[in-house]
Image (tube, rainbow, N blue to C red):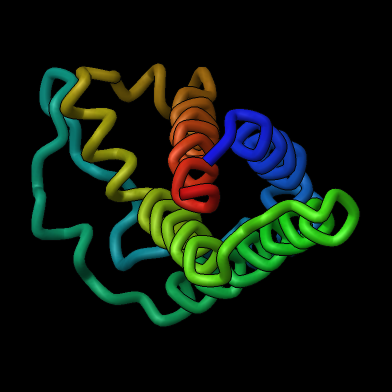
Length: 157
């Protein structure tokens, strides 16, 4: 792995991220990807409780989330594919597939919302920050950008 290859893949992923997460995502996916059988987690002095609730299955929520993850991952793949095509970037097929699996899995986990709410509770983010001041969306984006770094490392390994 060379740092230039890593930098190129990371740049492609960072450029593809807002395209896949905002432009390509449909309104239906955005509205329903976090749907579950209850509306909000309970908060007790900033700590989330009721752990068992997040695992409940909601078919519409999962369908919206997984269809968004598919289009998001396709957008990331297209950006990396453009590098491979235009710059003759040496990327092994297995590494590319592994990297795309990392980005898809990490995206699906957080976009279901409840896992992100649990993580936010662990670092003591309160209800006001999460729901009144846009904190949940900020944490979501920070998670995705951090995993762009991990994905780039996997792709060029």
